[in-house]
Image 1 (cartoon, rainbow, N blue to C red):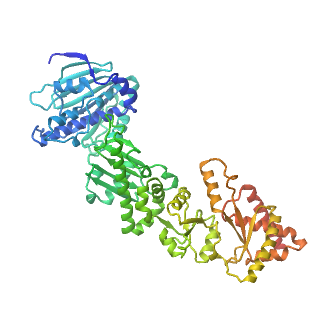
Image 2 (cartoon, rainbow, N blue to C red):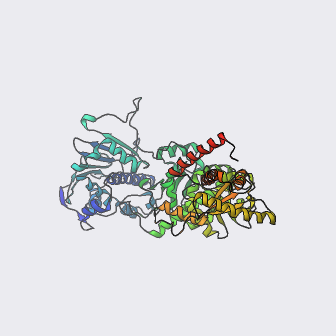
Image 3 (tube, rainbow, N blue to C red):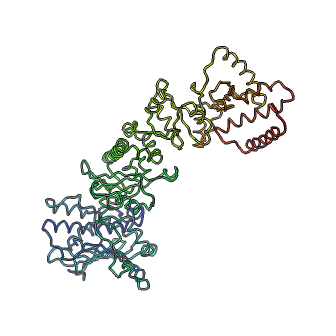
Length: 632
């Protein structure tokens, strides 16, 4: 061909500034685009071979090679795909934004389909000008009689075309790198990018560093074999779920997410209608609750990595999981980084939500023991999903379970029926099994049960449930002294309790120097407990919410309502009644009252440092008195 030069025909004004500053937000995307284009070229050729429009080379494997040379400041992306003719180079390269993939589909409409072609050999190619000031293409078309073509383009928009010395079908793209992009020529950097974006491409990818002073055959096997591809050409999500083993799922999980813990279980998505979607969602085992803040859902487009955790496709609550999703029907723009067509995306998101709910229901109904075992890890995710996605809540609300203080797992319905509280619809719960151990013991001693709600999300979740199930009320175990914990008494004992109550109330208010303290006296079934503190559920929740979000102090709007419940059956309380009028025991009575209060307080909160210091000193004083004389 005669040597040709000219200026690029641009369909979009000032295209290079747009490419560099807006269209591609990350410079490393250039390598994804070039390798993806090579993958497209091979896909096109392979498809034409399958329909008899081209002949394959015998014994030649389809492959893509990336070659870096630090000395020459070049990077090459080489493929043995369909190649381009002189006319196609003018059409696809000289005219920016003309889609080679679309033209290919039109030409072979009856023999192929667009689902097999992922690329836009146009703007995607020009992303390379983010890192190179000069690009050379050497290409030879598969068509018989075609001549090899060389194209050289400058970042200024000027180009030259001439004959190439390439002798094999395919394309070589050579980038002459800008000085500020030379780090991409480091083998480890190039490998990192290829692993990130191209790890699951369907054709083998090889990386070679030919820089003279570092030219080492790093890809050789230890036994002297040939170079190994960087990628896995057959990702597990493309297999039929029934053909996958548990070990394969676990191995895939470890490899992709670098998590050496096995996942709890997984969901394998495999559908072709109403849209093409494949993938695997893993429920990870969490070592700590804070790990639930963010998972990692990798989104792919025909095995090309697009991005992590794209909120438009992945329902927000699923971000707590780990997984891979491959959706060739995603309406991506040319950079493959931004989504279009919100309505379509919403359908994909809704379908994923449904599949996750169906999987949870299946495990609950068919593997209940495993479901119970998984619950401590998955419950923050399920609860968050219920609050964020109404349709998800409707599907899973009956399989939300709760661990009881007895150690088993029950649904809300199970709990209400088991405790014969259905007429009240009251659910007692525990937030800290160690801190609230005294209340738990009282419940167990009296045959009562409570559920454990110990995660950060639970306070929000029970408020959400009370709004959905308006007849159900949740009460923390220290917020209500249930009638089941009290002794039934006759009228004379009730009258005596009122007299005793007034006397003890005066005694404790004086000893604690707290006139605002509410005091009740009850005949609790358990005589071993001198007193407990009862906290108003409503005010306590507001206080906790204020502290959690660092908002305005709620103490003035919702002051903590605290009641000291004294147990008249307890020997210490009975002794106080006998000692309260003895002047010589006044100091001892004060110490005992303070000790009873602190012991009750310690059952629902930690004492602050000054309170703990006084408690320890007081305990020592009481022990000294007990060792010296019989106070009572």
